[in-house]
Image 1 (cartoon, rainbow, N blue to C red):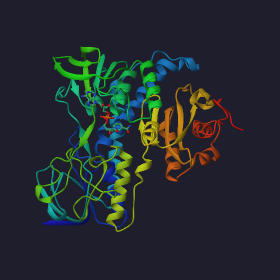
Image 2: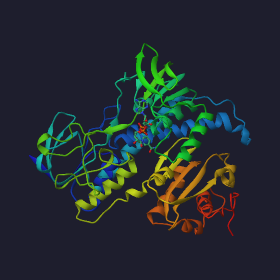
Image 3: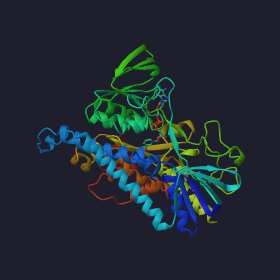
Image 4: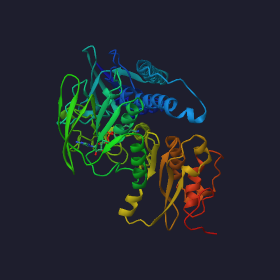
Amino acid sequence: MTERYNVVVIGAGPAGYTAAIRAAQLGLKTACVDDWRNAGREPVPGGTCLNAGCIPSKTLLESSELYAHARERAAARGVQLAAPVLDLAAMMAHKDKVVGELARGIAALFKANGVAWLPGRGRLLRARQVEVAGHDGAVTALAADNVILACGSAPVELKDAPLTGDLIVDSAGALAFAAVPRRLGVIGAGVIGLELGSVWRRLGSEVVLLEAQEQFLTMADEQVAGEALRQFAAQGLDIRLGARVLGCEADAASVTVRYQDRTGAHTERFDRLVVAVGRRPATQGLAAEEAGLLLDEWGLIHVDEQCRTNLPGVYAVGDAVRGPMLAHKGMAEGAMAAELCAGRAARVNYAAIPAVIYTRPEIAWVGKTGQELKRAGVDHRAGVFPFAASGRARVADAAAGFVKVLADAATDRVLGVHMIGPQCSELIASAALAMEFGAAGADLALTMFPHPTLSEALSEAALALEGRAIHAAPAKRKP
Ligand code: NAD
């Protein structure tokens, strides 16, 4: 028998669970299908972000930072501690507890909103029919007025560094090491490489990152990327740019990596190797041939600005469609798709998607980078305020980095905000809000920020657009 729904969502990650909850809030009879199972083989919602990405990595980043702070910096602030002892098992148990609680939270939200959660593998058939292969082997047939595809992404694998499950791992494996590797290799110095490299560096590993590109963090503003490279090097992260991996050999306890850079061929031996070279859409097997779903050559589902696929009534959101692979972008798309299913108007502002790298210092941005504006020939001004001039950053002994505001030279409209420094993951929200409201640099400069806070750096950077930051000497002062 076929079960009928107004909306069937395939995938219960941030994009999918947001779509399902919002659709149910709008009075639509909604089911959400997901086949993720945790280490105990129980079905859990939350997808990669909650179970093997954002949440576990942030838990380990917070915990490892606490350890590094106690070990390296507390004494200078007048807190003498006996040498802190790392209990990695307890740190991992805390992470698993947080993940478990949050997954149960999503399941509870499904229940409270009346979303039918159907554990199993969903597959789109023709005419908005969905087949669910349950974990018990039973197959359920669903039919829906609308289907929202939110199948997420999976790590890209490298043929020159095939995963072994213990020595050569992907990001999920690197969130669950049972011991601190003495020497950790990471292929890819992108977001995941830097975050996971930071965790294990703080816990005592010697960390080497092999990055294929000659330039560091190409998606960030160049000035921010330059500062980040300096800060990470000072922390002992050994980042080797222009490094092309040629092959890996694993023995019982270590991995030898061969790579080439501008200076020639090299080999390095590591206790563990993490492959973090990007993610690809997890669309394989998502739709039957008969469904006629259009994918591009990378497996991304083809969608328009409002996440409509080529099939009537079928939407696709999150990592499986164009745009940055970020949980909050997927959530915004999921909510938009649900609204559209309910016949309401909805849009996502793709020009104001914040991005964050949760290292120390944190890196965050929204809008265009300086180099993007330059390439597009947009005449703009930059206002920069260093955290060294922020009282609150000094108080926290975290004065490295800066905030940079980019504004249109003619209209003063804010085109981008870039930050590296303490709590930038939180500070960037004000900049996203400013851009969402189409703020000018002068609007930010006129807004009153509480003193002493880190957030003042944003208004000071906006003042610096006019050469009139109060707490930092400008190159040229205007009246
Ligand atoms: P990424 O694109 O950020 O970085 C991958 C890096 O690997 C790039 O710098 C690339 O040049 C390099 N690379 C690719 N092939 C290589 C090779 N053969 N040898 C050496 N280097 C190579 O991808 P990621 O770090 O894997 O993250 C995947 C996705 O997940 C990204 O879209 C990211 O935005 C998202 N993510 C976001 C967060 C966050 O928001 N804080 C955290 C983790 C992941």
